[in-house]
Each structure stands twice: as structure tokens, then as C-alpha cells.
Image 1 (cartoon, helix red, strand yellow):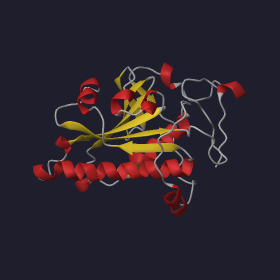
Image 2 (cartoon, one colour; image 1 turned 60 degrees about the vertical axis):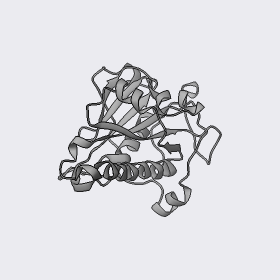
Image 3 (tube, rainbow, N blue to C red; image 1 turned 90 degrees about the vertical axis):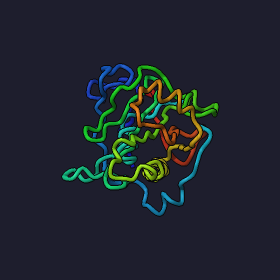
Image 4 (cartoon, helix red, strand yellow; image 1 turned 90 degrees about the horizontal axis):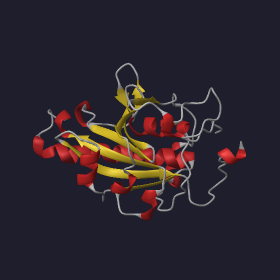
Length: 228
């Protein structure tokens, strides 16, 4: 599927989406995601895999928009339903998007990024070398305060189930879009909570790195600034 390529931080023309690293400090409105096309589900399941080698090339803004919508965006506008399930509709998982330009919280209602910290926190999401240069790290944070209808002793396990569904959505989107992806549970939760200023009752559960493959993969054609 051919889609307009827009590299974050690079202005292609006046009609292009606003570059992420020059956006206002408050919020970044994402392009409208396409809700059709892509790889057939069975093909995506067959192609799903974890990668541990990433390019340092920036993901284009259109793909970031679709990635976040696929992860946990609103797919039923009338009722506010999401692409991932949540026990009793609590939607307790927030997605934090960690980029070189800063760290943001995904707001699915407005399909936008809201600034959480004006600095790069990617290296706090694990201990692998690629975290210093892979373009996107997603951190899944559970706000247990939203789970008042769930018994307290079960809230964390229910939240992990919700986060796991989001993780799989991202894996399947990346398989379809020919993006490299890898999830993990080992991260510096204390540093993330402090730097993202998470409220009491919120805790990072899982992290997932997304980017382009370190080496040529498939027939994907990427256009960078040097080709313009």
C-alpha cells in the first residue's frame, strides 16, 4: 500500500503535517489514520516477530498515527470503543510515546500527542543498545485508579491483560507495515514514573520499541531527505 512518507522533523512542503520536533509544547495533532487496507490478518499473524536490530531512521508521521490508532485508538466513534479490549471498559492503559524530540502521552479521544516531558527518555525503557537510537519507544502505563469496579487484588493482572492486547495490536500493525518491533517487561520503572510525572496509582507495565529494520527487508521503499 502506497502512503505519503513524512519523516518526523523534516518539512517536505507547506501542506505537510507539522514536524514533531518543532511542534508547540502542548499537543501534536496526528494525521487522520487510514482504517482500511494493509496485510490480511492471517498473513500478519504469520509475519509477526520480535526484532532486536533497528535502524536509526525516523518513522514518518503517518505511520506513527496509524500505529497508535491500531494500538488503542477509537474504532467505534459513537460509543468511544477502542481497538484493544479493557475489563469493564475502564481503559486503564495510557500509551506514552518516547521519541528523541521528547516524551508524549497518546490521547485517543483527540488522536493527538500531549507533551509529558520535553526530553528523550528512550534509554530508560530497558537495557539494550538499540534504545539509544531506535526512533520510537511505547510505554504502557496502567492507571489503577480507573479500575474501581475491579477488586483491588485483581487490578494489576487485569491491567497486564489489557496491555498485552495492545502489544499484540502493535505487533500485527508492524507486521503489516513492515516495521521492526520488540516488546519487553524489563525497564527502569522508577525513573520512568519520576520523569513522566505519573500520578499516584499509575505504573509502567510494558515497553515496545518500533522502527525500521536495520537492514533492507522485503520490498519496502523509504524516501528520506536526501532523495528530495
